[in-house]
Length: 108
Length: 118
Image 1 (cartoon, each protein chain N blue to C red):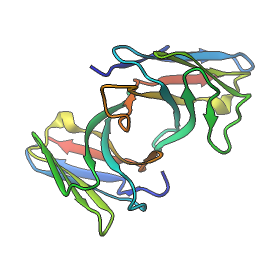
Image 2 (image 1 turned 180 degrees about the vertical axis):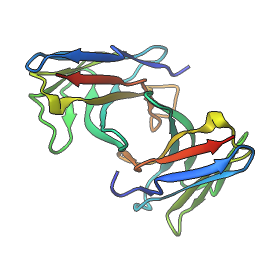
Image 3 (image 1 turned 180 degrees about the horizontal axis):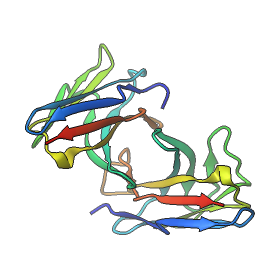
Image 4 (image 1 turned 60 degrees about the vertical axis):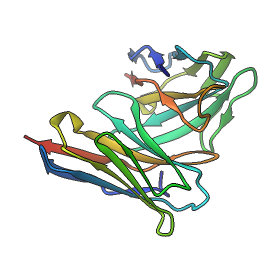
């Protein structure tokens, strides 16, 4: 995961929007993903975006992709306490490369 | 759909023993499964790619004789940690890519197996 970078922590209040950022290094990556990991559990696929797209929205989740800057973001609208978890971005270039994960803490 | 299970969910063993972890795709077939290792507060590290009916492909630095992988069917891959030592204690996560009818670039993850070697 050393080629995919994320900030380590994000703290927001319940009801606010959360934005988790990720930078990747290979512009030839075909798919980019966001996974959620709750304590002691495996990874849950939240959403993914194909590299020819700029944006994808799925209910409270919005993914923005800036290919020029190799920047991917995940916006969670109306963040809830149940959204507290670690969020991993990942790029697919032959195999998966994961970022270090961003721990989202949602305060009531 | 797209459920992956792992068994056991956690295991404690003595140093020197071998431990087998199973990864199953419950509602789809997976020609390819992946084994990851995750240390506390760190990201996932790909250990090996498991291919049904053929030898696994190991990442650099992963000992193939230490971590034996068998992918005997389209729904089951096993990881055996041989002669386990305390430094092998970790969280092991498998994932599977659907063979057909789904996006093969998508991986579905199991819930993980926590191994503690005493």
